[in-house]
Amino acid sequence: MESELLGHLLLERLHQESDLGLRIDIVTSRLSSIRDGAVHDFFNDAPERWTVVDELNAVVVDIEQNLTEGSREGLFVDFGRLNRLVGPITRLSSQAVQYSWREVEATLEELESLHQIFTVVIVSLILGWCGLLYILLRRNILLANSQRQTKLLNEDLVATGVTLQQTNEDLQYAANHDLLTGLPNRGMLWRCLEAKLREMRSEKDVIGLLLIDLDDFKSVNDTLGHDTGDALLKQVSDRLRNLKPQPHMFCRLGGDEFASVLLGSTPEDAVQHGELIAATISEPYHILRRQIRIGCSVGVVTTSADLDALDLQTLFKRADMALYCAKASRDDRVCVFEDAMEVDFNDRKSLEHDLLHAIREGTIDVHYQMQFDVHSLELRGMEALARWNHPKHGYIPPIKFITIAEEIGAIFDLGGLILRKACEQAAKWDVPAKIAVNVSPLQLQTLEFLDLVVEVLRDTGLPATRLEIEVTETALADGQDALLRVLTELRSLGVSVAIDDFGTGYSSLARLRTVPFDTIKLDRSFLTDITVDPKASEFLKIVSDLGSLLRKEVIIEGIETIEEHNVVRGLHCDVAQGFLFARPVPENQLSGLRMFPSQLVRTI
Image (spheres, rainbow, N blue to C red):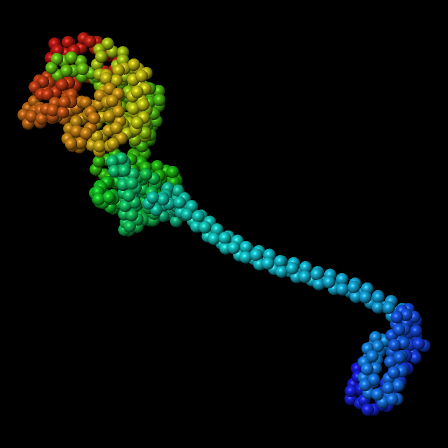
């Protein structure tokens, strides 16, 4: 600062020699202080510092001489030298020079150490702050990611919750409704009736239950396919759903069975509702460009009687009894439960149980009716006929117990039993006559029947050419592909096929042309008035000629008089069967099989 001040003074006030002298006096005073003052030790520690002081002292001497001589050029030169030398020496403040330079340097070294320490601390703090800042930023990033994932998780949970709720609703709907028609199912009906019965016991309400069964629905499924059957069930459900007035509930019990529940209705109202249902269902349906007609049977029961003793099981049982009577009746399609029905129903269930037991034990008998050549009266074959002698009720007509077997699904076991017994007996005959066995159409609808025939023929040793399977014409009317395939396979085995009750069904001649068969059996109805009415005999002749043209064997059934036999002789009939020749007999009465034809000829 003093050097700068001196330069300023030289530039601005060089002519004031008194000022320059003052400056020289100050520098001289300082030099004296250096030699004698407290900083003397500082210069002794470094001898090169004295060189600077000596040089500065020489400059001062030159300046004083130039001032005396008045040489300005010398002053400027000396002033530059003074400015260069004074700065390093006077850099310490006047207070600092009062202390030992050793202490000052020691203090400076400590300050430098502290400075280094503080520098390390500050750097550490800065690094720590940067680390904390990084951690904070990372934490914020992780927190943001967590928040984003939490949001997505919440959205997924909400979506899953909605899906689960929808699934639960779908499951609940499926548990309470029929998936095909959308109507309530049996379970929902059961729970509804249980609740209404409990309420009814206190409120004395009347409940009406109607069970509805579609007629001939199975034939629709078998002939037109299950898709058509499903479409028909949907249309029936729609008609019930749109019925006016609406009942408390319509439901589908399963298959072709429906139910309707009425509340607060009298028995007469329930019957009217059943008749309305029957009329609505019987209207024609149009499905896949086909017109389909079906009917229905309705069983009705109400809770107006013996209320205290009535429970849900009994209610359903009584409605089922009424439905069974409606199905058995040809005229009344709507039946109301009566006490007498329960007796008949219990008898029917008992008969079903006994029939199943008889089939399992093999106590169903087989009787045989002989078949003879129309002209020579030679034995041509036997027809096997099922007979059941009930231990309690006695003789049960075949039409009755065979129908029961078909309804309860026992016809396969019953048919197999009759087929095996007949083949076993025929294999023992000395005369190689054919054995004809009637087969239910239900048996012929599965290929398992073929396996049964092969197994029976193998076990009994009966040649396949001696077995004839009889199937009714009505069973062929629908032209079922499965049945035709089974008949074709039977004929390929060597088994012959006969169409029973020909002329009583609905099959057309064009359809018969495609049916694989060997024999035509004319029903006894063709013999009605044949001996007194020429038209009847002419009609029988037309049918028998048709069989001859088709090159099929013709069997006429039901001949009971000699007059009928004489008329049949003049026609194209091959085989005769009837009470005139022989009645069905059990196997233990077939011992005179060889002698019977000749005896018959002499009798006739």
